[in-house]
Image (cartoon, rainbow, N blue to C red; front, side):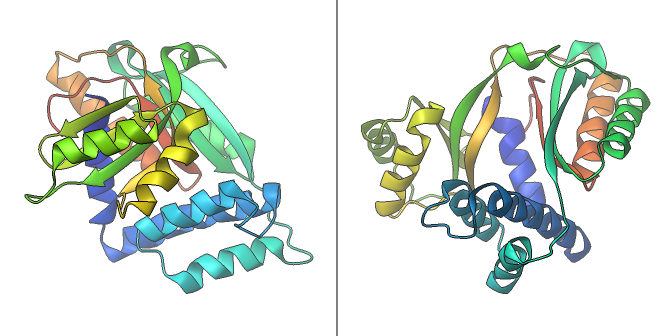
Length: 245
């Protein structure tokens, strides 16, 4: 189930209309700028920036836009300052939710996130209230078609150092590994000509929660969508066990 919601989100983002695509590019631009600020503008020595560039390209962000974001962050006198802030809370019926943001105003973002939790039947918690329900994992997701050899993918991934390989609804394959192995696995499979729809270090649930009531399912879906629509929110992690991708 871990890959279901992730793959569903990827399909929705990649199929977004032009107006929403602009918002996605804006968020990717923040990731690029943050990476430059923390590690410099050279992707050859800044692995975080290299990952951000790869992710931006996977969403078809134009090279000119990628370069502008990097140059802007590296420019003299650039006053943009984003910081990574996590918010933790509970969705309907106790679903654990972690929200990763890049914000230039903690107070604004905290207020926005709290409002959305309240609006859709959840509540914003304190630091650490749900973090223990997730673990860090390297995650690679690749699209699958009729020519994909699942056994070959499994063998190549395991040989590269992956811990698990799961087929998601016949449409995608999710490969997971320890955070320490992430770059080795990614680079090895990339050299073998594998192409990934998305990749990175993710917070993966340790346990899952099922929502039996339709109203809870509806509110949880709306909460996730509303959080992802917020300009400051980069990632939403949760442990809702969904039946459908």
